[in-house]
Amino acid sequence: MLWTLLLVPFLAGLISIFVGSDTLRRSLLVGAALCHAGVMAASWLVPVPPIMAGWFVLDPLGRLFLSVASALFLTASVYAVGYLRSETRRHAGEEDEPQESIIPNAPESIFVACLLMFLTTMTVVITSQNFGLIWIAMEATTLVTAPLIYFHRNHRSLEATWKYLLICSVGIAVSLLGNFFLAIAASNSAGEVLPLTRAALLAHGPELWPVWLKAAFIFILVGYGTKMGLAPMHTWLPDAHSEAPSVVSALLSGALLNCAFVGILRVFEVTSAAGLLAFSQDLLLLFGLVSMLFAAIFIIGQTDYKRMLAYSSVEHMGVLALGVGLGGAATFGAMLHAVNHSFTKGALFMVAGNLLAAYKTKAVGEVRGAVLLLPVSGLLWVAGILAISGFPPFGTFLSEFTILKASIDQGRYFVSFAYLALLALIFIGISATAFRMAQGRPSIAAPAEPDRTISFLPPAILLTLVLALGLYVPAWLSDALHQVAQLLGGA
Image (cartoon, rainbow, N blue to C red):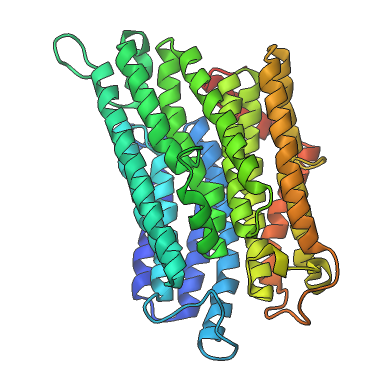
């Protein structure tokens, strides 16, 4: 089954480069995504054996995050079919040239191939048990997503891509140094080094050199934290999310950031096994609060609604780090929040794409009356904003409340107050901006691109899932979340 997860999107990506038919290429994209999601669904019922001598394992942490990525990719691939179809019509001259367009130098085949390679590299990151291979795959996610960000081939997308490559490359270099320190921590006085695999390091945790292991965690947290979007290393994220096609923004925010988080959690497990749990938790707690603070500052008064959603991702990555940093029941809440945020943010970026196609602008001040102009997308926009702000009965409220309750139960009253205050500020900033876009008289007479089922059904499905998780968490999912929380030192 693991070979299927790795090879299906990889081979489909290679084939899509040479396929001449747009219809066949898009069918290949959805088919590969459907196969990947089907295997992931089966993995919850049938044990998945390791492959390559245990280098690839679908453990509880990997199964949770890869299931989320696979489900999000499936809905995004369906959305991408409608997006590409619409862009092709515009490029053919049936409509006016839009801000987002396919041009001969950026063929659809490269776009689809990079999407499928992105799914492949995410699968490698999440299932790999070797820290060196995780680092290689993390860098590969950067390389295959850069062409997706540069898809529009204008000066803004060029700047965003260059910033993405530069900052994430610096981050990946820092994390490489962290891997070197990890190797030193895993060596003995005779110069022998333990295999840099998760199983070996967890089994010999008490034998690792604590000073070098602390250095390794700091460098890997900063390095992968850059890719995750933790402040103050987040500066690539607003530009990339704003300039990339909306379907790509959905995957970057809902799946790519989680991959970097998994990389951090793998090393976090090792520090916990070595008796350095408190040290690593304090660092995560600090970065979590700082990220939420940065997000609150930049969300208030934001004039670009896609950048607003990008800064919201910075906030929620901070929530995840804070939850794991608190430990205990908050770790369970953080894992549940990872699921809720991925689906909610993926849906919001897709809806933002619908608004952009209709209004031809990302400026908040030029978008009014979305509920009247685009009834379905407008309502989904309102629902998504409520969900991402942690409003009941959506699942984000449940996960954020779980983290808050755990913080209070632990007597962390300063953290609890700061957490609540920052959530309130961010809610005010997002709602004041987003609800103005939905209400009032439409700012244009007719949408340039009307609502179509293929464009609003994927985000509607994702938001329905988030609403359902706020009302009821299935027993199988609750058990999985508890298993992951226990692996990370939570209760």
